[in-house]
Every structure is written in C-alpha cells, then in structure tokens.
Length: 69
Image (cartoon, rainbow, N blue to C red; front, top):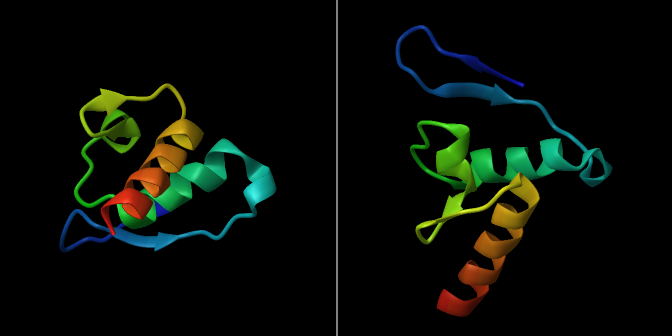
C-alpha cells in the first residue's frame, strides 16, 4: 500500500482505492490526514481513545473536524 523513501522515513506514495474496499479505504483516509503515526494503533487513536477499526476512527475524526471548525 505504501513505500518508504530512502532518504527519510516518510510515505512516498499511497495507492488510490474505492470506498467499497472498506477498511483499506479508511486506512488510506487516516494515512492521508493523521500526522506522524508510528503504528496502526496511532492511526486508530482519536482524542486519546483507541477504536477497533479504521472506519470507526475515520468517522470519529471527521465528526471531530466538523465540530472544531
């Protein structure tokens, strides 16, 4: 799904995917919007709470963004 650059430990390219792909789609959304995650658990953690799926975390993150803007 992603490949690392040789100079730095950053994501070089994230493949596109369709919303019907489920968890893969939500993982991609989180990878594009969460800065500096060190693990999948970091991606699923929103406001100090770790969600069990990427979908739950992505939906909570979208809800949080709507409230704070």
